[in-house]
Image (cartoon, rainbow, N blue to C red; front, side):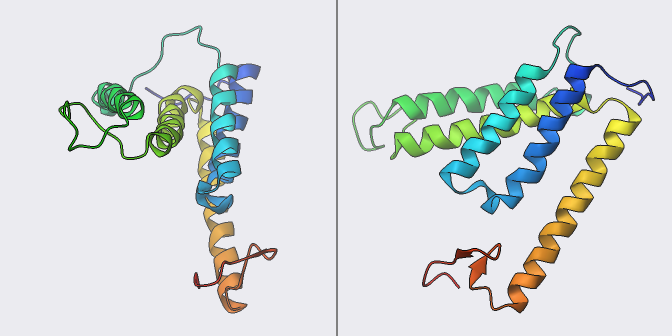
Length: 171
């Protein structure tokens, strides 16, 4: 695959915007560890998938040829774990199990959104200007996170993002 200078369609640009927003929002929203942050991240990736025009065949890079089947296997195992709430010591424990089906299903949704991002990214970032935007977004997001970390550490690390108190015992 070679990168071209030819711009993509408006819907591809919309998908690109959603993917870049998810890329920026994910680490900034407390690392997507809170429910609202996880939901926002998943919604942004889902919006990118919905907005993407699937008129052309998907480009599966040679490095992804093993990734996609492995992803499907992990997705199947996650679904089986989510529906089988029995512990490993229970009869019939040959099936995948989950000590907490709710936590397993939440993790499955989050990891599926990560996988969708990874599969959709080569489809969306096919032109040189879009790859430049992606790289600048990664660089600027990393710089912003590093700068915020330095400022928060200099202030004693008692408040996250300058407005949310850190819980006692988590210093």
